[in-house]
Length: 91
Image 1 (cartoon, one colour):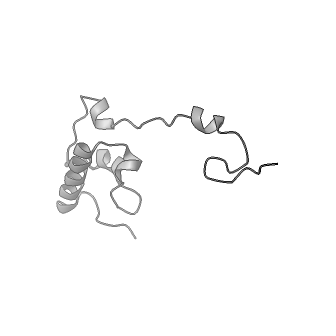
Image 2 (cartoon, rainbow, N blue to C red):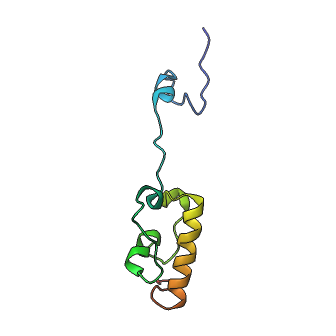
């Protein structure tokens, strides 16, 4: 009798069918999806969606933004911090 080996796909000794049929939904960039959405560094309420409670800028995997818009988010948050509308950190 052959034993099944445990690996990432087959941790519970189940078939590979569940792994193959499960589809991971790709995140859509919120700035690309809504063409009317304009990122503005003078609007801190809008930028708070891209900053966590400690004041750190959230990564792309969390926000779902594309590379171009993530750079724009970073620039806008840094400008907003510079004019003291957003804090650099919250302790």
